[in-house]
Figure 1: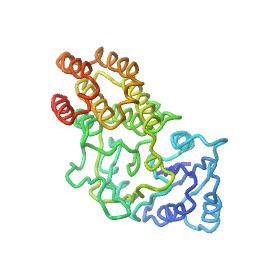
Figure 2: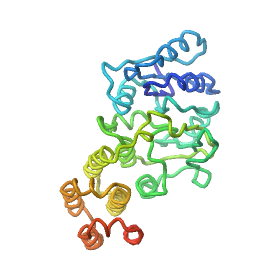
Figure 3: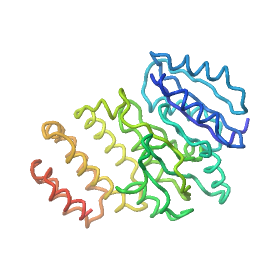
Figure 4: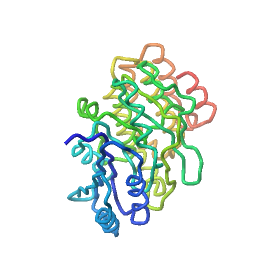
Length: 322
């Protein structure tokens, strides 16, 4: 059966927040067809009891359904399961402790009607405290310039790397096999990088339509582990290198080098030292595909001692060059 939008909500131990999240879907002013896929990642609290009660009491036109994982596999696997089951023309990712404004989906869906070539519609995000995370007010209405799109998705101070609060064409995701890598944190980064490689036309909504709950106890942001984070980021860098294509090599090389600079800056020297060989391998892979004018400055940077790399002036100069 045709569905306009599939909302995918990966769910794990959010009994205090999931009702508000689901109500924000049920209260949408959207006048099209919508399915909401809640993926239970083997919750151990009363989250699914709350979900089932909500579904039992709901009498609107939207379809709510629960998919259950066989074992706890993390957010990436839950989102992938939702993608595999989705029937919508567009996919919308919503985290289970966040919620959206009642006009959100109608605003975004109306924008897709302006041009049938639009692959993605992005809107703004606020925190529950009213702080702006991301705003589209200075963005153009519609962009079909692949170079502009890559710069905004790949380089710092561009678009948010997370997949939430945007309508994405499901056919595009399936055509290019764009899924979240499982078993790591920061899985959003390669998903968004891969997606951006294939976007030909994107649009923006200048409204703030998504409310993000910051620093929830139990979230990956709160339970930060430097070594685990670095392990995942090394995997992410290698995945990004595999996704590099021939369009805009300099943009992609800059993006990966800037991620390297950031990782060196924020992680502990002892953990960076443990992964020296991993970084060397990444650097060698980058050198092969890097435009010639970036090779020498990147070699100079890599040859510097870690204590020099971590200095603020080194970071500023490196970012300026790239």
